Length: 157
Image (cartoon, rainbow, N blue to C red; front, side):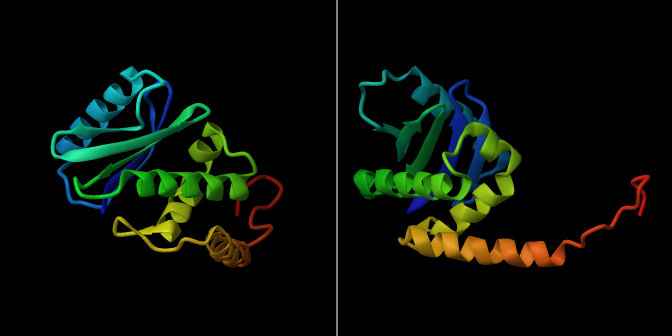
């Protein structure tokens, strides 16, 4: 089971975090700080997973972003790498060559895509197309609910 999913930049700035195990806020900050520091210190030729305290950290770098998962000791690291890659593929298909700014300005969509892929730390849907279809339907509902022309010329309702 995935315990947490963290997305951060090459500068160490947190862009997305999803926790599937209950941690206190103080512990979440500690875990995030230590894991990002450890990953950023690693050489690019090193393995993409390592043990940290009682969990395994699996990460992968795409351009300027690091995608990181904390998993249980008996979980498969390669399957977790594949989950990370699938999430990146979904983001790429949705945003069209995803970049850090897409995640910053559309974080709610990034979370929604992750929620469609993972449920309670387990893979929910393996099909990229089904995830994109569900999000597309949700986008249509959101467009229908958003009233057009709410503001008049001076910007007041």
